Amino acid sequence: MAGDRERFSTATRLKALGEQAAARVYRASARARPQRRSRLTGRAALLALVVCSLVVALAYPMRQWVSQRSEIAEQRRQAEQARRAVEKLRDQKARWQDPAYVEQQAREHLHYIRPGETGYTVVDGSGDDGRHTKDQGAADRPWYSNLWDGVDHADAQR
Image (cartoon, rainbow, N blue to C red):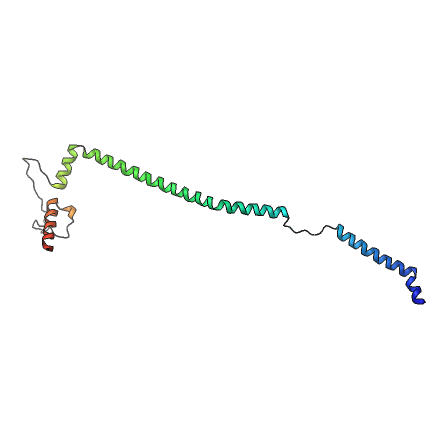
């Protein structure tokens, strides 16, 4: 009976009640204590998803926009070059409309002379007897020499 007494003794019952109360308090405090929440909440995840979607959706159009801007700059550069070439050609056309310029070019490049003038060929003393060597540039010789050289060359190939 001593075991029964001990079992039903006030001290034993108080001890058991104290342990039960302590367990209840611990469970209640665990529920009341805010649980450590993860840093990624539902709203943050949704925001991250929206931002990623916008980046993906805008990446291709932005790349296209940048490439088109560079193409536009290249086209403008080419248009400016073409404009300068057209201006140069207009100036050249205007010069060729002038009879004095045409005469000057004919005298210089074709070795034309006016009626009554005497044409002279100046020999530079290099030992060339009037015949043109092959290594002399075609632009340095009169046009008729180039013509006859072409005929002679074609005749030699036959």
